Image 1 (spheres, helix red, strand yellow):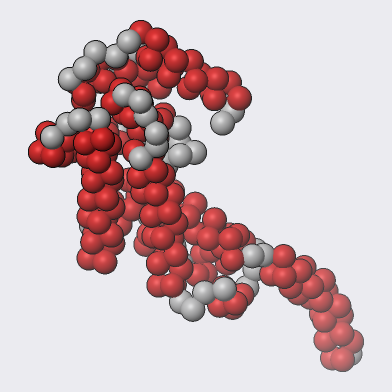
Image 2 (image 1 turned 90 degrees about the vertical axis):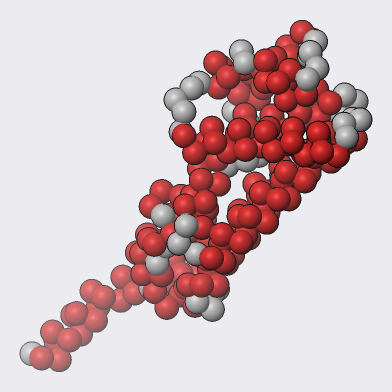
Length: 227
């Protein structure tokens, strides 16, 4: 009887073990990173735990260590994803070709209006994380410096003197970071109506109606296309 019960239990458990094993075999490092990033943004870094992620993915905790040395290794990779995403994109947009300073600033504005380029929730989450970690605080400070420097170089390319370019870059960048931190309730459609005023404030130059209209049109086209 005891042998029969053991055999029956074994038959019941085998499909579950097989299913778990199949799920683990299908998972990639990117699956773990995506799950960890989702938890980081939604629940904060303190909830990015190996067991929590394993349960979320429906696999055993041990499979985590196929891809990562430790939780700290995973957190370092999440921080690198933030650098490679938000900071890299902003620096690239600031360095994109532009015939006028208005076009240069509009290239940067594209980051604020397209979360596929710049993820504000992730940026805010990393800043909150930095309150608890000196290592992350240094990474945020370095990112802020790199972003401001890239915007400053854009202004310099369009004829602004070094100090003027630096101050304008700080005003443009930190105004937007403050916008995210305050979590202002304002539709993007409403923000588009402010574009001309922002451009004048940030550059000291009046944008043409065509420049503003073309930017708004391109943004609405992306929205309609779902990109």
